[in-house]
Image (cartoon, rainbow, N blue to C red; front, side, top):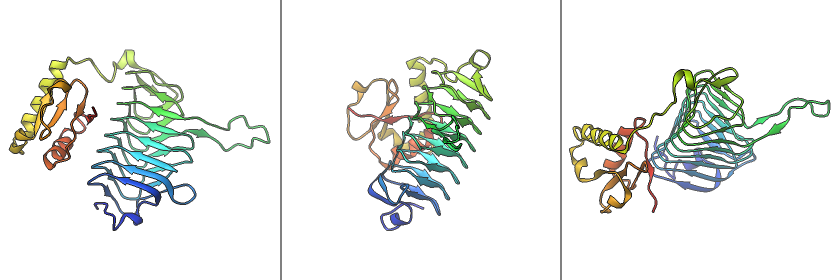
Length: 272
C-alpha cells in the first residue's frame, strides 16, 4: 500500500514528519516514539516497509530505496539513522537504546539482532553488566543472516557470515565468522576486490544496455559517466561511476533503472 497523507496517521505517529515519494507501508506497521509520538521521522524516496514492522524510537531517518521486511523491530530511546539502499530481511531486531547509525548500502540478513545495550542483572546486588554504547555500521557492510551483533563499529565493506556472534569491531573489507566471530579473511578472501574505473564503467554500460531492451526510451534519460564534470544536462540522470552517485531527478525511467540495478549496483544521490 502506498503511503498517503490520508492513511499516514495509521502508520506514523510523530511531531515532525518528512516523507519522500512512492513510500510503501504494509498492514499493521507502526512508527512511534518510546513515550508517545516520535520527535522526528524522515523516510526517503521509494522506501518499502513490509507488514507487521514495529518501530519505536524518538528520531528515525531512512534513506532512499531502503527495504525492511516483515516482523522486524526497531526500538530504543536514542535515534536510529539509516542510509540509502538499506536492506533488512524479516524477523530482525535493531536496538537503539543507544545511538544506532547505519550507513549506505548496508544489508542485514533474516533473524539478525543488533544490540546497543546489555541490561538486566541486579546492579544493587553486584551485577557488572549494565551499560549502553553507540553502534556504527559503515557503508557496504553485510551481516549475512542470523547474526548477533554487540555495540561495535563495523568499518566499511566488512562482512559477517551466517550465524556469526560479533563482539569486537569489524575492520574494513574483512570477513568474520563463528561464535564468537573471528577474522576469516585469509581463508575466505575479502568481500570486495579492487576493480578499475574502466571495468566499472563498462559494467554499468552493459547493465544499461540490458535495461534498454525493455525500456528503450531510457537512452534519452540516462547516461553513464566516469566523472562529475561530465554532467551537462538537467534533463538526464547521470550515473557517476567514480563516485557511486547519481543526479537524482525522480522521473519514472530513473526509478525503474534504480530498481533494476539493485542490489547488483548501488548508487546514492549526488550533491554538489
